[in-house]
Image 1: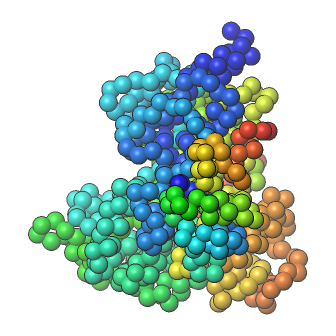
Image 2: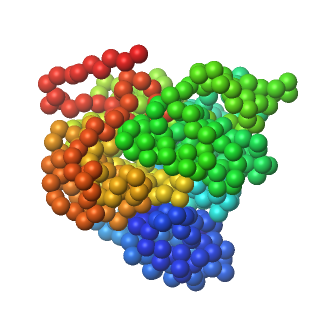
Image 3: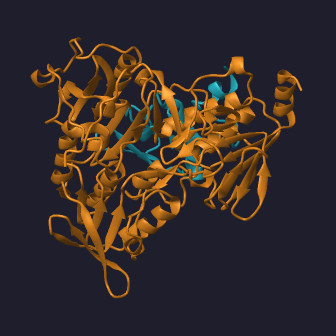
Length: 81
Length: 464
């Protein structure tokens, strides 16, 4: 599974690091480091992390592959306006 | 064909070519499909890899948290594109609407998006740059090579240039217990982007973490051994640093060489475009079928005196690509301007550094929250009586507030009482940017124009 975090949006709430510690870790007080290629078995944890991010900074390829990305920040802008 | 009919046809069966298969190129392609473009889409990239993310290459990858082989970008949707990867674009025929490729092929377009980005500026002395053990860090291949050498326990790593990438590399080396020397021409790290006041904090960060930081020096030569491996670096102060791994971090060069002679307004500073991402030709006439996005674009920004800005920023690549893609298939009345407030981040020595606005435009700075000594603060930059930028060290949650100030051209010095304001932050002080006529490794924002409303220009001669 691929993921990317918009670190402009990230404000270091660390919800992702609590929910999916194998993928996300805090480095120092506020900096987030993550593994952009998460293992398949972490899919559920990753989905929780994506949903829990208070600023919706995480984009991951969703459970059904591209096109199904809950909580994906750029989605509505591309589709809507 | 009437304009609306053309647009209908374009959206249904036109040909769109995107040169540059990285972050901006991918997000543009996704936006085109999301907005209903059903024609043919061709993605051209000179690297053999599908679009991947670069920021982790100097952070998570070097820290061992991610593999340099796996930073591919997640896809927002299927883009149903024809991929031409591993083949560079070598020319553009604007009249015939064709892109020439390195393998001799030509690709025709009805609309073209150029998102070719930048490349690392190499060590200028070619023979020395080719020594074994001399690296730059920009591409996935660079990261794979550097990662391998770092794992082989080098005696010492020598980093040329203390901008963001150079500092991040030094930080990762120290975390692995590797000895590292950093040489910087300016007086401190990060000065090109953030100025000397903040640069002094960055210098302390380096030294406290065991980096052998040399400032105010230039590297005069890299020395190889008899079998062509780098063995030492010579500095302008006469010192010699023994090293078996050198990372050249001297900023970036825009990938516009392939456009030479095309008639497009492209040069070393990027490709000039209007706020709607339409490229200018060399006569200053806006094209209507060629668009640009990402690091390679330079466009005028109303918040910053309509200067042409080229931004090497991750978020800018995405928003500019989305705007360009939308405008490519929209009628003129439905087009949108790209007016992103510049913003970037860095992570080094465990400190989260973020910036909004254009700090290098600010001649003064106020520390409005926290303190420099604690390395947890907000610095606000002022220019001609208004807030122009802000930087945070481990204080990111406040940055959005300051972004609003920039967007509303709030007055500077800032008057509001804030939480955590210290006596040192009550007065603005000079932000201490280096003489702009001297080359540095480069900030991440390049100012390359001036406002037509400016009635005069001030020539700033070199101090040396």
